[in-house]
Length: 455
Image (tube, rainbow, N blue to C red; front, side):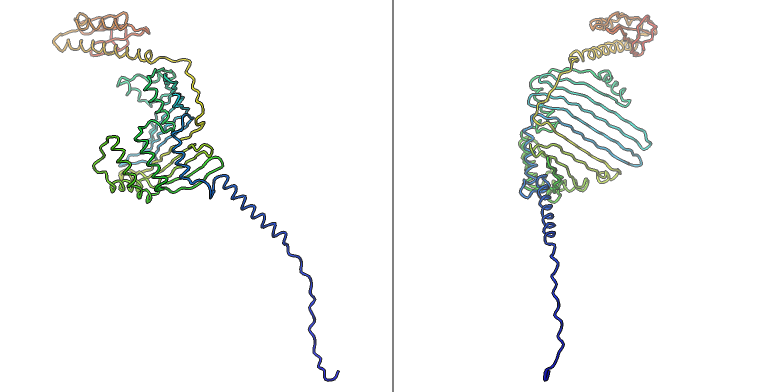
């Protein structure tokens, strides 16, 4: 191969077909991710946790507030408690716990109610001495009749204090239903008060109700003085709402105007120091002492009624009073159910009418008064120069008082008098005796002679 230059030729690379890319698998993964996102969004929208097209929280809350006027009957359960820990002032301290509960059913339109309530209070001092009292009772309202019963009473040894003021032992009334007839005005008023306790928007004047509605609108809609967290579920809206100090201060001119209008309508003279600046100062002081406040609101999605409202707050007492240290906790819960459904109330099978119930107490007071006058008159005889008691039973005033005892139904009234002593007694319907004697003695002894000691 003349005149030809040979050059090595690079080998032509052998092209091998690539493996097919897993397009189907990639598509499947993308579809799964998309479905998961869509499903999560759908669930969030259905459950109410997120819904870009749903009603705003303030709209739901305002509607629930207005719906309070539409509650005619419901079952309720409420609890309020306040407790403290490590309270101390000038080296003296302790703790306390107060809890009030109420539950039952109320129909304010048909004037029906079946309610139970209780109150407990306890305290412990720095030396671990404990004190506790508790009261519990029941009430039934059936149109014109109110029934009351004391279910439990423990006054922690304070019974004697009540007796000093003429209040009988409350344990003697425990378990006894008392029937109290009501006139029409009392029926209406009591039904409203029970409705108010159970969470209905009743029991207040129209002027106050109008002012409350304006304030709620200002707080919720006009100024939105809150921060809100949506924790709603499938059946209920659940909002955690807290006051925003800055927004609340901005709303003070509108709020103050409502308060001033209310005072004018109610004929109330406002305090001389009421001004916008003092109002703002009060709000600032409140937040400085108690901090931010928040509450949980549960509202039914199907009925737009409040189902539950709860609030809890712990605060440092030292911020309120510099001389005291310790913490205080406040808790409140109100639950409502069976709204606008019939409330069934059955009258007690056994009860005593109020008049029959208080008659023995009135009689006892009259007896005590009469015997007290006998004792005072007898003591007065000595004070006016009579040297002995021998003339007690012949004294005209005491003779009249002895006649009063007989007119009050006291039997076997006797009077014995001697130089150093006297004794007057009578037998009551329950066969017991009551007596009066020398030196102001008062007791339950049967007098047999002037020497009988009344005790």
